[in-house]
Amino acid sequence: MQSIRPELQAAGFALYAVSYDSVEVLNNFAVKHGIDYPLLSDEGSQAIRSLGILNEAAAEAVFGIPHPGTFVLNEDGTVRSKHFYASYRERDSGVGVLEHLLGLEAGTHGAMDEAESAGVTVRGWFDKDTYAWGQRNWLTVDLQIADGLHVYGHPIPEGYYPLVVEIEPLERLVIGEAEFPAGVPFRVEGLDEQFHVYDGSVRVRVPVTFMLVDGGTLEVAFKVSFQACSATECFVPQTVRMVLPIGELPLVERPQQRT
Image 1 (tube, rainbow, N blue to C red):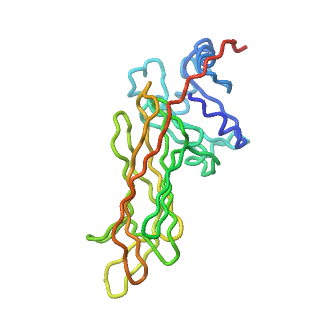
Image 2: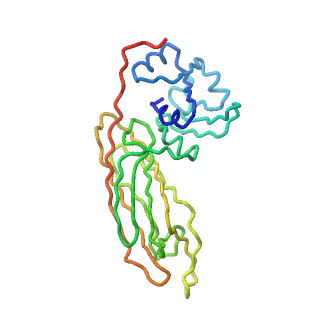
Image 3: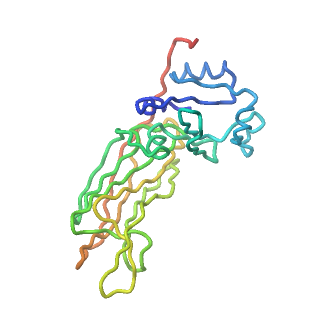
């Protein structure tokens, strides 16, 4: 129940959080963390069980803890989509819900790094400029490929160099699998192999989860490797290394009580 309301409210969505905790516990939690959207108490976990999201594997299952996740409803209450995590430790950010569950542009993101090499401009950023324990963030890598050039995608014949995005390991940082868009089928005259390539603009996203507290500001480094080619020749394979700072999300303390 991290503070994801501002991004969603700005996009015209109403946000409600459901928990197995009592009204009193939720009220204290909301005051401590500065949460001002509705927290709904499902003490006894009847709604959690009826929705099929009870986490039976968690040690707290006896208390009715649910899998963390999001239901997206239409105005008439129909479930439009849902997304839940197996681990109770993971949560989506508001930007993550907007961009990766709803397919909308949040309009804001964290600090950006940029590099240019062999006719390709590479930019990278996180969804947000802050992290919280257990919160899933997304690294977005955007490539702008010069006219007349392409870079290889997946799958690719052996001996060629596809686009690769690799985050360098960092303690307590859980790195997910990169998500690549589908490439365009491409053949090189005189060769039997079929390639998949990207041209123009391409975006790759990598999910990461920060499993640490009191980590302060971190620097997350990642590498983007690719080979740019024209219809007749190829550049030497390139690797650019980029670094993004991301700060710890401060907790908000509010002295007043909710009513």
